[in-house]
Figure 1 (cartoon, rainbow, N blue to C red):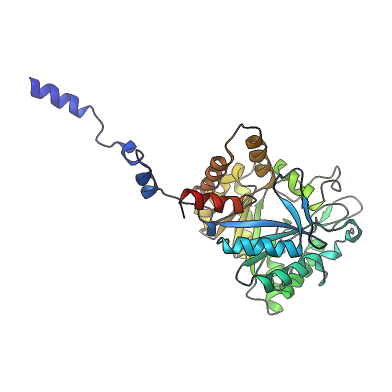
Figure 2: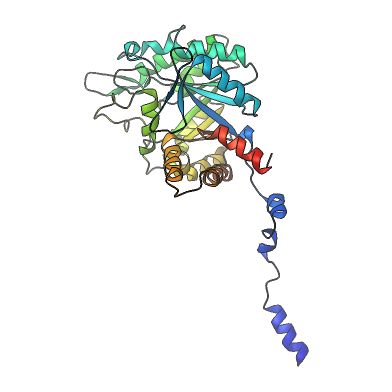
Length: 343
């Protein structure tokens, strides 16, 4: 009788206790499915004219617009910490903005000069450049517009190609078209190859959504005030769509994209997972300015612990399937990883 009672009691207990793999730090680290490393991160960098200029961006605490000399110093530091690449975004002076955005392909322009100087000073780090017209246009849109305010697809591509070639001539490693014009990846790939730039890679913003999370970024590059009532919904994706993202990615891969991007990041991790599972190509996501500013604001008010919230959020990017994440927290994250002994 006693044996029977024992057997019944024993059998009621679970044979598999998953908590056994959680009860100590060493075992949690040993069986962790995903880990965050410096090589997973790309640091966005805002550049501007001048020398020894470091200008705070109020809507992005801790992020600055840097003159090229300071951007070089920052890049050296990031490279020494193991960051594989930086991506450049220009804050173009108002005097150089036009409706046609022709400053975007000026061989002596801000971005082209920054590429040359950073590449010379820090040759081992990868340099990515944004390909879009919004920093250069008086209307703040990613493409050319007609008298009715419509964004022109094919005419815009002609300018994007010129912009890409000028950046390649400056020594860029990766061009990242973020404009969402139809067919621009194929046109850029064809033009780069025809001019002997077969080694320049394309990171396509393939699934870039028309999102409310871009506001601080537009402040940073100085386009927020110019957009006016015409939104970017006619070329950026509808947040309600996911199958359309798969179509966009498929087209960009077919046109020659080496890597693809989902933007924004955290609200669209389901898209990241679908893209990675469907195509298996290098897949990136952008932890955008609004995501950064929300975490910053909450932590500054004592509502969140910044370090733990940031590390958790970026680990979620990796779990979803990203190969790399663009994050304004990059430098902080690497310091935190060193402090915690995870490197």
